[in-house]
Amino acid sequence: MKITDQCVAALTWTLKDTLGETLDTLDEPVEFLIGGDDLLAKIDAGLQGKVAGDELKLHLEPEDAFGDYNDQLLFLEPRNLFPAEIEVGMAFEGLPPGGNPSAPAELLYFVSEIYPEHVVMDANHPLAGIAIRIQLTVHAVREATLDEIGKGSLGVGFFKLPTPEHSALDDHDHDHDHDHDHDHHHAHGHTSHHLH
Image (cartoon, rainbow, N blue to C red; front, side):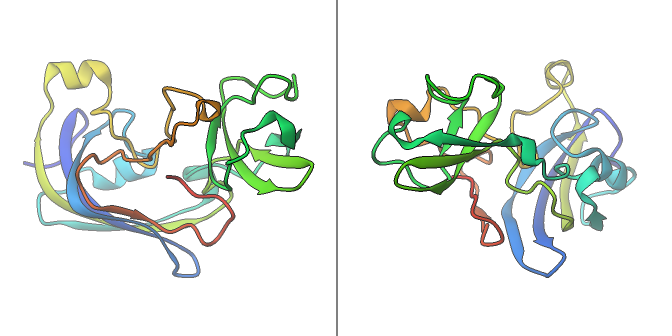
């Protein structure tokens, strides 16, 4: 079966930046809905007509991947608004009470830098502003169910940011584990951010 919109493909991939540094590796096949919300548009388009066993290499500029880096999404917040045990890379859904009122509450903010009196919070995607190279392998293709098509997603997604059920202020550690029991490795040495 060839890949078309409204089908499900099981993929593995290696994601690198333009310097060749590995950003993400998906070792075991994970299913994604093609033509839905799971994959970036350029990846969806590149997979059209592929069959199990095919490979695809793509180069994605920031505007086709995770967008350009926006300095307006950096916020300097008082250190005392945050728990004592915060670490760089922790995610907060919105800023804590008392934070900058102009900061959009619906965004996910990452702890970028920690100073004695202030914390730098960054609502950019950790891969914003980065051109990426991705090599994908198609392992299986099947028709999507009506339920899957209706949802527009299998619930995994390509590098989607985690949406914590609880704020990091509640002392919960939020795992970025969109592939469930599969081996999935991130390496984010290129920035001070990382996804858990």
